[in-house]
Image (cartoon, rainbow over all chains, first blue to last red; front, side, top):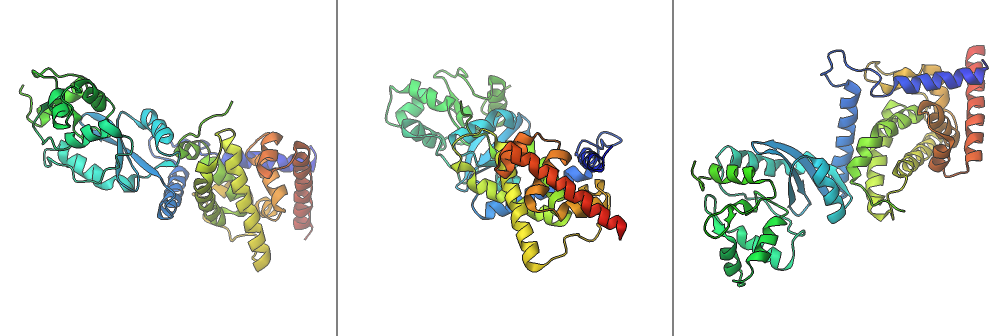
Length: 220
Length: 161
């Protein structure tokens, strides 16, 4: 073995030893301290980037009684609430809002607190700034009207069509509900078919029923 | 065919650990942490301006390499000692390299340093070394060869002393 080979081999070995997966923790649960240190380093880099206005969208996944929710906010406000983990929602946000999207929980702290209060029954209205850029035109008008429907009450698609000056636009209202980027906070679960049938829900009908029961709008 | 830009978080999830290892081996644990943060911030700043999402790893490492070049310039200008005082073992990802070799790597000119660290420590192909430095594959091989030779010479001096 030449000296160069020897040096190359030592460098290779150092590379193997410095891999984060090189030392799996003994009990399989405690995180590798170097992984923790790296996560901290990334977090402080992102905090600095945020202070320089370089984080267009911050997201976090929050566990709730209706399953994980992906919450995303721009500097303007809450822009997206997605049912399910980030894998489904975050790539969409990157395409629709900005690719500068990172996990930065601090920006979602207030939303998370209010959602926690909502799910535990201590809060009926959300008071967080919204960024409604993912809606436009008539859909935006319908969703803004929807935000006035109070906790525990329901309206029909036709009611919302009438309130927005388009009594025959029930179908368009349905589309607006189906494409609501900020469910729960903008309460599309409070919209039912005329006559009280449930209609649809992006998060699944079980979730819609859970939310309506939670708010006391459905019995049983 | 070009790839749309993925969420920036995907780059961090896939490459942050390697970029960090690369920088720690190149400039030491303490300055490596600084260079790492600067790399993330510079990358975020430039990210929306990218035309496509091809070879984002190479793009990220090029930024990291520039931080190594800047660091080398600062060290030269202020005549800072290249070798850092030894740091406590367990959480120091640099500890896998013995101090002499580690110091010798950090004393290499930036291109050779990046080439050697990428080729051996990160076990990457010459094509990626070339993409990172912004040179031909032949030049990348040359940088690795010359880098290795000066490491050998450096270590011999240490021994001879």
